[in-house]
Length: 218
View 1: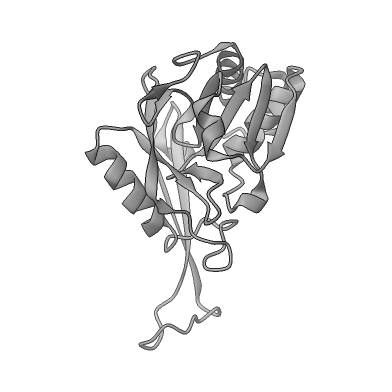
View 2: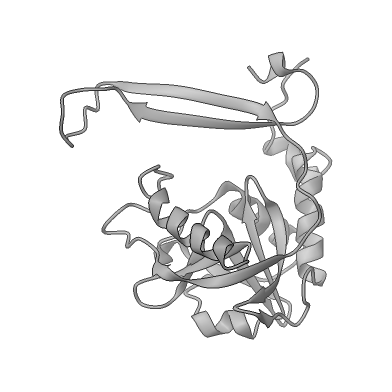
């Protein structure tokens, strides 16, 4: 499918779902089906994001498993994103039931303080995104200290740098949260290194990219 689309980057989205059964909520695990969508992709324009803390809390991991990218769980994200966009912001930061930072509506979040990269740990009910894992590897490769841990909400207000990561967004700097500007007011030095490294990796120009990419012949 990707090869038939011709030259240029493609965005591929696989969807695994259960076949239709009887009326009700019981899942029929014997009827698993797969659909794959692929379309041409252009690099998002250079920009920085304005974030707002959502009034919606992230689904608790005992309610809907955050480790799986399930469509039902995206109602939580959709409500947060809609409210953020209507308020004039690019995305929302969702907190856990205990008030710690989890992630954005469809992106992981990172903060930089005194040159150290921090991000919420998996135990905070986040999706351990592929782009998140890539950025963590790039940071370690660049000699940047990485800490995965519970992150208090107030720490985002005092961060030197903030950025978010996602398959569709790449690495996007954040200039403010709740109208409080970050010290760097956008792409600080750590964010710049990781954003540029990710772009090189996605294009196959980073030394580590050989293990991350699957070539598709013309």
